[in-house]
Image (cartoon, rainbow, N blue to C red):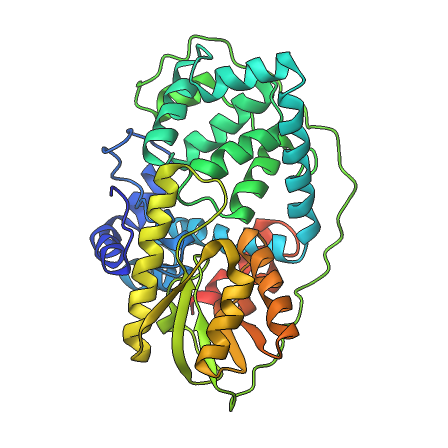
Length: 395
């Protein structure tokens, strides 16, 4: 695979990129030379998204190599993911509203021929906008796009092609190896002018030509105005939900999932006696995303098993609530621990597993990383307020 799907490979890529994570990154990070030719960015985001590497260790490695001032831009890009996750964690209603919108719009695709035709042209790379069509092909073939291309892609989708942002976010989520519910959904909302009210992103043909090194001519006209989409009913932050306390003396097993695959770097509140995880990811990802996530899951489970000196059992993904109860009973566990999953499909699935476990007299207790506990409470407003706390986070 082009992107490291194991922790060992991700650490090797981080080590190789670190010399460029300082001022060189700040100077060239917005330039996109194209697939297989990018030297200015690390392309570690898929590994960080699954926490084969954690935001904390990547940020601290860059600071150790260059100092905080020189590594500032790289560290901030890493911390954007923590910011987005913290923001959505306090506002889960935004995620569930997005899911409802996608379901409604997918239903409209079957009834609105104009919407269906525009959507089909976009996702089959037939818009006639050379950069956009090339990005569609790259996304489907590799599961990746440069960050600057993602912003322009979303802007063209919304303001030039006049397609619903929710369908674009769903298209990204199905294909991008590094798309987490928070960064993907909220990034699209930001381009549309919903995340920061009234602030949109307008793609520029001149900027695309310049940052792509002239790979694209962008002769097809792009929108010249990006009017914010109609406002939504505000969602007030509920704050971080408290997690239940673990029993340090209870016989405990570990359930590992694809939101956090570095169990060996979490401080667990009780000794781990056995490890389990799903047989595969579920949902409706592209074949490439499914293969990447499953390879990462296998690596995370193997490392966890080695760390705790046990085997890694695989539970059928199509019936996890029943399977997790059966596994706990077979091992005599009254408590199961799991890395806390941020708002998204995995968190929704774990909530169902918690209900099944509770009915069987078993506690399923999420454990939040120290980094998340320290970072997420600062994601109350915009990123510029959040970034003032980054020096303390990486200190």
